[in-house]
Image 1: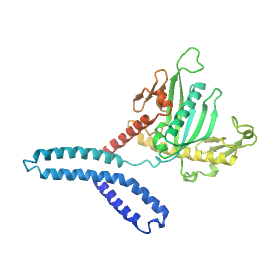
Image 2: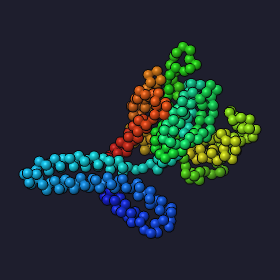
Image 3: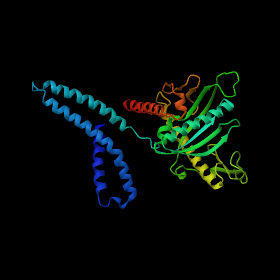
Image 4: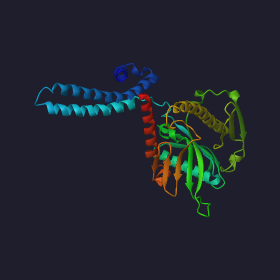
Length: 354
């Protein structure tokens, strides 16, 4: 680890010199890459320097052990510096963990009603509100991509695009089965029903071209949009359905009046879904060697239960139960997302030690 840190410290010095050069801004793309790298390395190298200083403090204190008057003081200094070094070493290990290249990307969030009929569709609407409120707390932009409304409210399927720094990093562990236990509004006997939805969180591709899609593999259909939208939306074949024949992935978009815009948005979602399939395959292979399914992207796995009568939320992957369901459904997900990220980080650290 120390050799790696020495290399990174030397690289930071090199970047300092390059950025101070009079010609540094002659190539703006190169300049931006260097400033990003400098910003990433700065905190890590600063932490490493603190680690080195603690090591120097130990060496200095050990030289004083031979002096009877200074021995007790020196011993205290050594013990304190060892504690500091151990803490800093843990922090350095965490900072050296491989970064997820998708962490800073925008995402497409897809919610589908599952078992439970109309109650499942209503729960899909509740989940959409929960994630929307979380996005608002993070000052992210929320764009509705497509929605299939249920007869009694809620959604059979809804897709939104969340635009903001770190969107994927904060919500990437939300993919999977979400189960709700509550008394539906339509239940006259007061019985608790169980229904479920599936959530998919997909990092947005930088450009559709980043994902290799052969136009010959696509079937594109246009049709008249249905549902809300006024008279105009139903007058023309503005809705678009794209089928990716090799994978069977189907994307529909009818939110905009323009067929061209709907097609462009549908292609973005298709690219994200194909990228997501590739990502989940990779994550599943990695997860096969770990105890937890965090990060495996396994949609069939029931990851969470929302129990309304008891006011609790349980995440089954990390055995976390929080009795603050009203706050969670209003978008207060920070404690949950932090716990999931911490568990994933612990898994990565454990893997490094194997």
